[in-house]
Image (cartoon, rainbow, N blue to C red; front, side, top):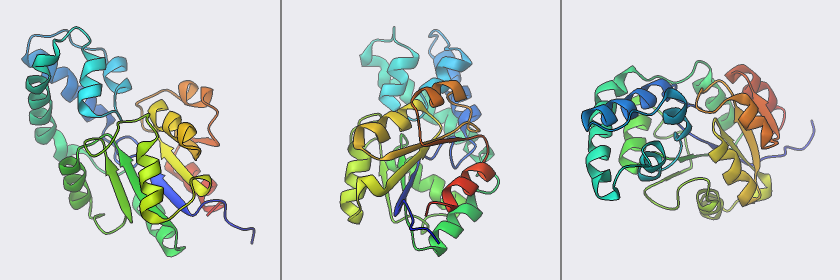
Length: 220
């Protein structure tokens, strides 16, 4: 067998492992309606997925006075907690993670979620013990800053050149590029269209979890 290319596989969460893009989009829009703010289009609301919550709301509602971000954040969290039970892992994700673990690869998550939000999602999905390390937007710089990947590789003693970042947004791929890691786009998540992902020249762009699995397992 050829030598593996990657020792550390880092996943985004929303839209990559969890089928949550439609829920997040609706929650951003509902929060804006609650406060009588301009409601972003589906395209704009989904485009900010993957960023830290404050950065996401700033981009989705650029006219909002920063003093009102806490109110908008509170309304977003309210709607997300109500709809959180609707979200599930994409089909095939659990099996892919288990196979990567069986091969002895390090697994990590780099997400725009808060620590509380990610822990709740991991617990709900039964994946709390699946990952060797995780990093959230309220713990370090938000994507596309490379800090999440830099911190994860330092924590796990890994080489960025042997690390692959997998995500459904250009924020993920820009972060990977800035950090010096490989980037893989997934076009099944729905947050950013395939043409925007491909424009950043990732190592691969998967149209399904099955395609991601096939590509990844040839390289780990």
